[in-house]
Length: 268
Image 1 (cartoon, helix red, strand yellow):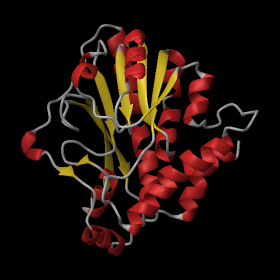
Image 2 (cartoon, rainbow, N blue to C red):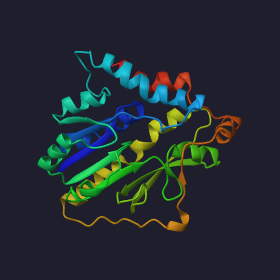
Image 3 (spheres, rainbow, N blue to C red):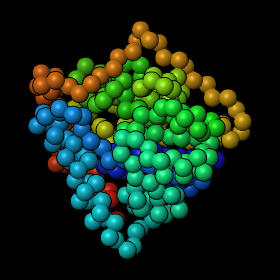
């Protein structure tokens, strides 16, 4: 199968991409990589700090430093660029849109499937119909109840016992496509939001692997249409919601979590 994997050049994105190593190994893959940015007007100190440790530091400082290593132990997590190099996957970096040269390479690659994991580009127009078997997305919340951004935070704030992750087919909407399956991560109050984010995407990787196997055998993929009445779409939280999150004893970033997560890449 020819698979285009669309991911993010940040800590959660790198962990998710490493969990997709079997897909890189078993299929002909191409990697599209985007940097993650906050939305315009987001000025909360807590969200800015979260973004700094999740995205800015890994992409701009830690990953380039890690990539200087000349020897990597077997089984050691790789940065997104190292993953692409190891598996001979063409790598293209994009922003909020697919530039014409990258689009031409996608058409030439003729993907069977596209998978989006923490990818900021909105799929629309000809891109939606490019892959033979469609586009799939791993969303960091349980759909249809937790669409939009920062879904694990919303689950934590709402008192849910677990945060969800959803593998769904992509249609012309945002987080609206039919659901293939949902997996759950037990919320741990002594762990930060950043830690939950870095765990949740990988939950649905086995579902996607199984989907690829069924597609390769020519089988139909069973997916359930989302109930519009149950749909909830969250935008960035207000200052009041952030205060409520902190008042419940939750944190956005913790040193112990960060050292543990980043340490996976730097201790090999």
